[in-house]
Image: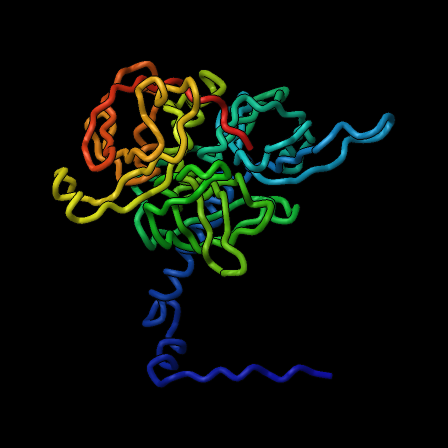
Length: 347
């Protein structure tokens, strides 16, 4: 059975443009298409050799058997001596990790450092020579509508390339720990399971994001951690093997203050963090914080919610006394808290 011939309907202006020679009226459209194609091809050729598949084993397996296979994701080599960037959730719970090079062998990999709060992990593989490297760009220079290319291994299909645009900038995303990841890139470059940890690349062949998540069953809603965030996290992981963050030891929730109360205490934003519990022996406990207090500032900076508190509890506050402003039974009090280094995040 023969297939029907597709019917192409053209308007008069489209017909004239289509019938023009390549150098004539139709040339600009053809040139634009060629430029787009060249950009995608060039970026894929530049970064593709550095993109790897990350395979995890969830257990050692029984005697005489191979380890049980866990999951798989993507990653990319960012130093010639074998350091690989990927997502934290790709390596979570793995007893053993392997990195598969494009058209190459599978190499054993070790976790150098892992930060679930930003969904970034750094691996190390040992190779006989220098490995191809994906150059890192600057995610602050991105613009909405800009061409981006995603490279990875969705469903195990190695070195798959998809293209799209930057749909939005400055998004926030919740990591597996519940902490908010700032400045996340939204794109419509298609991602699927297995793309996690792979690079999001600009037309110059520079990595500007680490692909991290999709929203299913929606289409075209894909997210990447900005490469500037990944650079900071990777540098800390390479230096210390972990990210140092401060904590004060409270469990709380966002709360809205009454307008009268906000005006009375000179708060432009009528929100704060209601303390639900205080850990025994924690910095907050030593400072005299109690359940029912409402935190409205830390170190002179406004706290309008739990995310603000997380944002302010950075490494430079560890061991440094800070003023904690709270509302207690309608009265404002200022306590002195000395944040400590937070224990490693649980999974």
